[in-house]
Image (cartoon, rainbow, N blue to C red; front, side, top):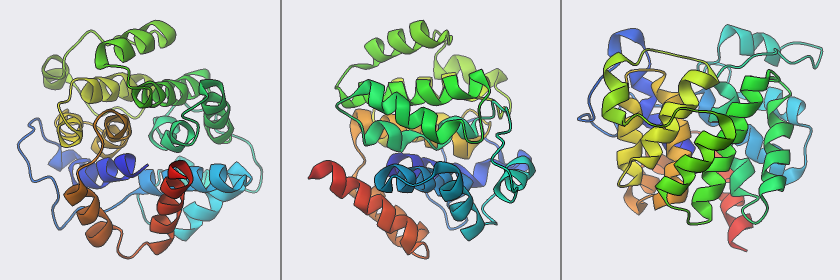
Length: 261
């Protein structure tokens, strides 16, 4: 979960059109960084799964608590809607928030999929949205089983039909801003699987010059499972960028305690 949140924070300032970059050479944290809707939704998923809460109600509760964190107009409308009708969308919000499903179900892949579906279909029930969330969950789960990058790549490509043959350097030149699962999950998975460390994975993701906070969230969640997160990066994220969000920190810390016990 923290891997997704840090990826979101680092990528947050490079999402606007005039700030997108095509290089890995950038300050990892800057004073303008912040957590966005990616982190809020990830927290809502963790809260739902930890406490067996109604997923739509819980997602709406967290969305209303942090309304100015970059939610799209479509998702804002869903947060404030009366009916529980999903959007039939395949936007990448389905994948960026789902990491707790894998984290909390490391011993049982089917349970991880059930959890992922539970928190996805409330708003993203298009088959490509569900697939994107499942593929992300599966990649994280495999990484927690200590599978290597080549094995994870083969499973995700085979099971989900994603093209994972390109390298980050191949993807970067022509990659454009893309808010779909189809256009976000495969490159984000590649960024994680090609990485040498947690930080390298997030740098890969941001350097594509696309939806950088979401790419960072997905790649960061997988990279956390692959590499772990350096202590100094964890401490900086929590003390600087989550300092005014004790409720997010509380859910995050509870999730890690649950798994360690």
